[in-house]
Image (cartoon, rainbow, N blue to C red; front, side, top):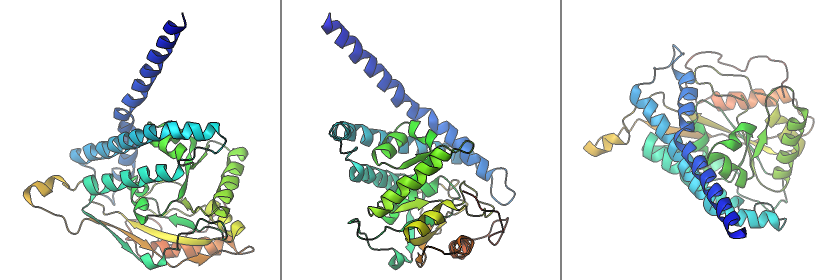
Length: 318
């Protein structure tokens, strides 16, 4: 009967939802190994302790859980918006979930304070589409970067590899925020074209884009910047906002927040975001000079743990 069929569909959907939610406890294990790759093989960085591994797991599990809860709350409105041809229509609400989650994970698990220097260099918020939005760029050293940039309190669009959309919670909220997903495997011209098309559309509509131009996480060396973010800035004649993210090397091994139980407070353990003077991109500019200027700006305030000190000469990359 139709009643039994509806019951079966309902039970099946609940089962799928339970499986999806349970992955919140599983996927953070992979994040532990990814972060471990950055720290443990390097002679310039301290090896991660056992409790550091636990902290990495907890940060990722809480991040996924909170974004999952927020995403599921927003999902009905998003589905209705999609059916009405208005897109997901929950971008602002999804960004609020991302920003709140990042603040919780940063202050509860990582550091007691985040310092923002050069805040006067942040461009004014304007989403009326009358002028192209800026392009934010930053160094990329740890998964922590993904959380702390939200503390700039700017609504940004990210570029992320396509596989992230399948992560529980994180993938859902990023989809609802309408971030940009690309396939990195091989020379995927369609994916690259999609990146430029969606990035240009976001910028022209007044929504800033955020890039990690080095393309991958690295703490103990300074990788050269790839061309993508700078091509987009030049094409749209956007301002480039260089941001330095200084993650203290003892952040995972610190006892924050447990040390608060006995009144301890690691005053020196803080994350510092430095917003540098904006760089105006114009059509016809030399992209290598623009990359070097941005590179030098970002790394001017960051400690050197090893590797290259200056932007190396490299062939152009997408």
